[in-house]
Image 1: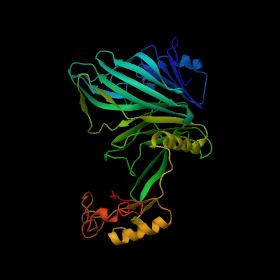
Image 2: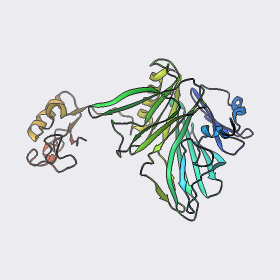
Image 3: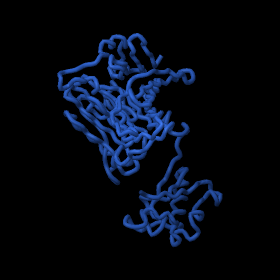
Image 4: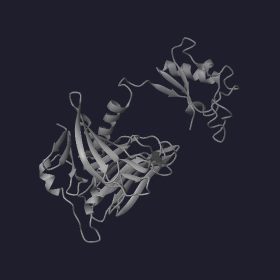
Length: 390
């Protein structure tokens, strides 16, 4: 079974095709992450499930590997949840209060782990869905307000991922701009915190909520890689924190920048999905897992995509009905199934310095509107679709 709960040890195991993910309830009543990597015998890790301290100045070292914690107390790492209660208290102490394994169809299972604040009626449900055939785990968090007054939510992360046991850590991510999209970047992570984020209101070429971690030696064909991707197209944040005790924690979710909100009595908030995985065969192994997952779980339907032609490279802003129809006819002879009229069809959009966002059809370029270039209305069977260039 992909999910197991060892009640005596209070240990959770999530097993995918080629990985083990372990966490449990320690003697302080909080969830503690234990292991993520190659498959192991889960009960052997139970002895790791205990509170740890280093000195009187570092009395809660285990909080650096909390599976999902609140801001407050002796926890100083990036939290999963930050909140302010009606009486002004901002200390959130989440303790374990139960779990449920939900069966979905023949092979599907979801683990729901329930946490609650030690003093207030604020509850968090952590949901884990192992995708066995893709070797991945989907995670998300649901926050419910059981108080009689609103609670101000300052930050809710979809998940916290912990990676430990490496002597060095290398972060790989992508960045870019228009006409220079998705440039691969890699850099070592030393002690401290590195944040990747977007405040643009959308996910695009400038930043993408995806990461990969390795020990600096992984290649396309070999080496261990831990990775994740946040399924969110608005403002997002990924925070990578390396501690002085040798671990890395990745917190990811909707960006908290300028994003606090009130959660009313009886209301709930559900985070986006944060999918993560472990690959023992290098970055190529990681890519194949994510690509299969996207094709089979995310994209609508599994039919082959239509062959598409985009008019931008041929015309740039010099768009008009006559030339677009001529291009569409040539594209159809090549077997193209969908023709896209790109930038320049709207407003005074004759250059990159005017008209963006003015979605009125340019009457000089298209006297009869966009209907004048829709071949479906003219019996040719090939649709022309306008596309605004952002």
